Length: 346
Image 1 (cartoon, helix red, strand yellow):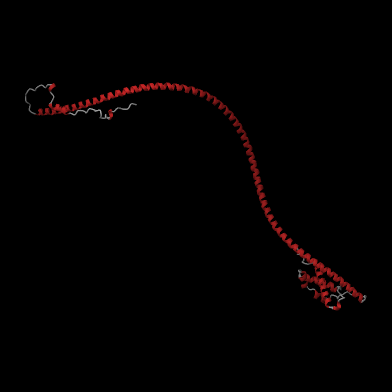
Image 2 (cartoon, one colour):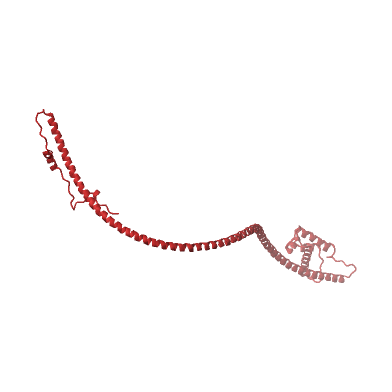
């Protein structure tokens, strides 16, 4: 795309004419004799009044090559085409001078219009440049906002895609949950029917158990009453037996005491008999020794005297019997031996 020109050909032409008019007004003010006439524009005057540098400075922009070509074309039009040197053949000098003055006035009016249009164009250009700058700023802001909106739109599209995927997954999960809910409803209905049946069976069982409990309770009360009477009877019988047993135990305790006394006296007699037996065994031993001593001596023929059994007690035997210890008798304060103590009655 070609870059648009900074200034147009019309702006260049109007600016050149304004510069020529300003230069003509300056010459008219400095030349007193030329106040009432319009001097023609020559090549030298055009070069003095207009140049590429001045035209560019006046316009404020423009390519020097473009401005140079435009100045050459205007110079050719004004100078070589004869617009600056109007030749009116066959006319008197006064009429020709008036014609020139009229032409100069028309040119000055045109130059005034050109200056006014140039000023308006310059103001419009400044306004347009300010508007362009504002528009550029707005465009830049809009571009930034557009970039932000595009970023937000991308994020929204990503979120929308994620939400759509989640929605599809949720729809699948919802279908599965609906199937599960239908199965659970069927299971709940079956469980409800089973619960009703179980409640009916439980009520019947409870009625049966209640009736059985009533009969068992009555039977238990009867058996408890019978057992109470039997227990009272048995208790009376056991009380009578206990009294009889205590009587028998008291009799047995007396018999035991008597038997213990007899055993004690028998034991004392046994000890005395044992002592006498020991004394007799000592006497027999002594007699055997004496007999042995007699047998070792030479035999002496003499007639032995017949011993009298009633009087044949050897003095040593009598002495041994007298010397034998007598068993001690139990005194009231002496404790009874452990094997002879009274055992406690059960």
